[in-house]
Image (cartoon, rainbow, N blue to C red; front, side):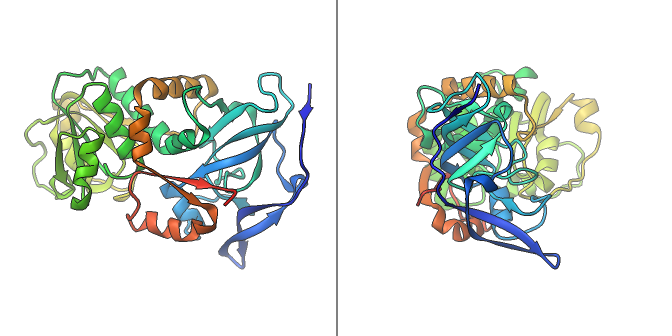
Length: 337
């Protein structure tokens, strides 16, 4: 069955192209028939700003794998056309990850086609803006909490630390963990944001150097029952040395670099778990389960407090700002502004 009520107008998108081996990113006007094949045509309302988006819009390598490419790893909007029975025009949907802005066109556009398996209905309690305030960052934070709890993490034990706590993943992780009753320690290199992190539920703030300073010791005193790490690099090495027996580190980012040095001691003497978190390739049933947990465990007033809405016309400035570590919490991109 095919449903349709499409307005076939031109629209604006952020497009990356490659000329003589150099990446160029600019606004381009597109038409519906230029969009890729997909089971759902979406009238996009919002996308979001993530570290990967900053890399893409600034023309940095490491994200886009084929050209031309529309940026934006997330989108939320309204179904305009559907060739599947489980979605119909008017449905509110959210798509995160799914290799958008990497191998498939993404959400920095006013219309997009996507596969139905990528899409999840927006939870009834959330607006489209809030769904994008969650976005990949919030989705990843919830995945990380679920992974730690699957390995035995429970409230009432040792502290749980969140690195890069003032960023998107970190902010949502702090709010979720605090809501679930954990004693949350936030690691941040931005002293001016300590009050912000405490407003999300952190009970203690530590400087990033506490974890990132190299050490010659294979193990250090046990402190953490769990950790959500979006930094990697030396910070991850520090976490592994200080995680308590049977604790779990959920590794979901590399803002501090992709390489770290450790020994086997945390694993064979303390049974520390290191869980890799991939929010891009997640099957649809698991996506729906994660969004159900977000609806249950993420306080929406706190989500609103950490979110700013910015027009897509400012995307290049915003991309540079997130790469420079100047963005707090979550940034929703209004693709129609």
